[in-house]
Image 1 (tube, rainbow, N blue to C red):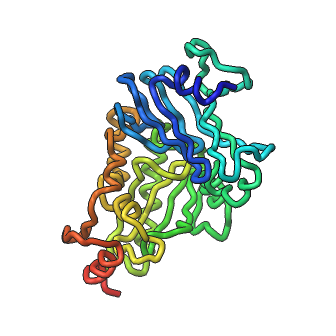
Image 2 (cartoon, rainbow, N blue to C red):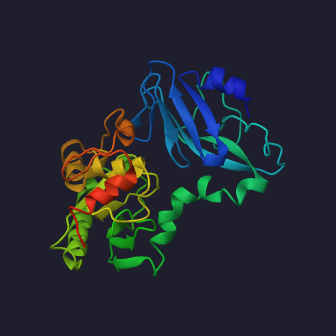
Length: 304
């Protein structure tokens, strides 16, 4: 296992990694000109993108691939007020990686130790929370529909009065893993989403959208079916709002069209910046200063 200094100076010369152990992610900054991406998102020179457990870091135009995981530190030496250890690079067999990356394998992992005393209270942030959909889709209490290909569950933290997720039983980690052979499956997911909308008691008084987040926080492909009233206490931040009302939210039919045309899904460079833009009503485009004032304004468009 290499030291943080050698990892940054030698192994990760194209990028700089900054671990946020308690928050469960690593900040990736592209230093050089060689293309760097996280899953299907291109980082871009001097830009910073958060990398979460299970995501893949691609270096030198996808020549080298690494997966992030957090490891519990059984000694507890990295807890308390001490600074967490920087990411280290191990290959699948636990051997030290060669400095010039010649021996790099396609499933290497970037590992970040975590203090075992904090592992329990932060478990939802360090490698388990982003796998939560896989547990929820098998929970009968969460399921509202299922067939041989897909299951529909209620979003645990709905951002509107009606918010469902359509998930395939087939294990597909992200949009990046989709190929043209998945077109039939995604079209079936669209049809199931349409059925859910038609069965909704408020179908004639509200609007719905069906789509995918460009950079989802949860592993396993899932189609959002969400009413446009956004009347929910779980919608609290600008990030929540912009993730559903900007181009960060990609319409389902656009994803299918990408697959039919190009055989894969591509995400625009810098799309994550859309989460930071100012708040504006998705119906009349009026700008508002805060999320509470925005939600109050939306009630005029969707009265109960």
